[in-house]
Image (cartoon, rainbow, N blue to C red; front, side):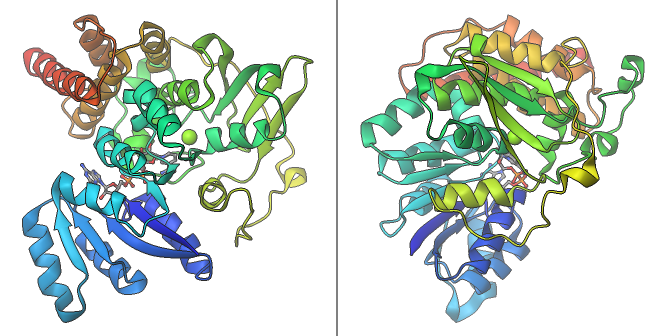
Amino acid sequence: MKQLAILGSTGSIGVSTLDIVAAHPDRFRIVSLTAGRNLELLQQQIRRFNPRLVAVLSPADADALKRSLGAGAPEIVSGIEGLIACACHADVDMVLSAIVGAAGLIPTMAAIENGKDIALANKETLVTAGSLVMAAVARKGVRLFPVDSEHSAIFQSLEGHRRRDVRRLILTASGGPFRNRALAELQRVTPAEALAHPNWSMGRKISIDSATMMNKGLEVIEARWLFDLPAEQISVHIHPQSIVHSMVEYLDGSVIAQLGIPDMKTPIAYALSYPERLPLDLPPLDLCRLGTLSFEMPDMQRFACLALAYDALREGGSAPAVLNAANEVAVEAFLNGEISFLNIPGLIRATLDNHQAAPLEHIDEVLRADRWARTEARRIINKSV
Ligand code: NAD
Ligand code: MG
């Protein structure tokens, strides 16, 4: 019986994870759940999974939840301390880290420091603080399993092979909803169009990141830390069908890939149950019906965010944390109608240009770079309207 903490249980990844847990009650037990503001869904999850500890963002929400659950309520805590308490609960074996954005960093790092194994969906943790996180993983001897589908595919394609035989990693990307849209038209796309991903159903932030391909840029940085390879050995191919989830190319020219239908339950379940594979109630991959799998190189002008992420990775130190924070502000501003879709990379570039990258020795330096970038990106938006 594996005892789990689910950080971000009301999100897209959190809900898929709880579906897997519900289908395998003999394998998993929920110790703690955390959510931001979706109290209604959280309340249903508490009734269904009976956690010992629950965290929400605000103390007022914690009180409201307690009142509404009445006598049967578990302990309910709030704020960043609440998140940390859920991640570090003594009964927890593994933490599924699925908060969106840099907010996932502190509780994930706390869990590692407390010796918990991690199933990592929150890529921003590795983007902002990869060197510090991987050092803590090694120091504490915990296991960190990728949930991101591309990294799960690479993880699976590396199994049974020698790391030194790897020539490069090839991350696949769907190209999002605007892969074939005329560049001039992108100036006018609405948040609703950008949120409509062709293959995956996901949270709002990662859906916009997929449309700009910043998501792939963040994943390149995530791969750099997970698999300890430099940017030069990490390539991106656009693969509109999202069937080949990523590949590893070896020195002899062999390419090993992992394929499947685009459903996050597969990589989530593998991270939860490694090295076993759980039976999942998903339609099988029918390659004959699909007929064609196609691949193309990403256009770095159309997808300027992908180029920016490579630049930040090469610059190193605090640059990826600044890239990430500026992107979070840009996505929010786009969703609020404050900036256009094509202004997203411009805002991130301007923020990075004003930043002097510094080496990272402590998590506080990551948080400082993150805060600075948010203020700077906001300043640039306010100046330009
Ligand atoms: P989502 O927006 O659907 O859910 C986010 C969860 O985090 C919710 O439970 C929300 O209440 C909580 N939350 C949001 N802000 C918070 C804050 N400041 N403090 C505490 N909790 C907060 O997001 P998602 O699509 O499930 O993505 C979660 C993470 O997984 C992201 O880092 C994303 O990049 C990654 N990921 C998602 C997918 C996917 O298919 N959705 C695939 C790969 C990786
Ligand atoms: Mg992914």
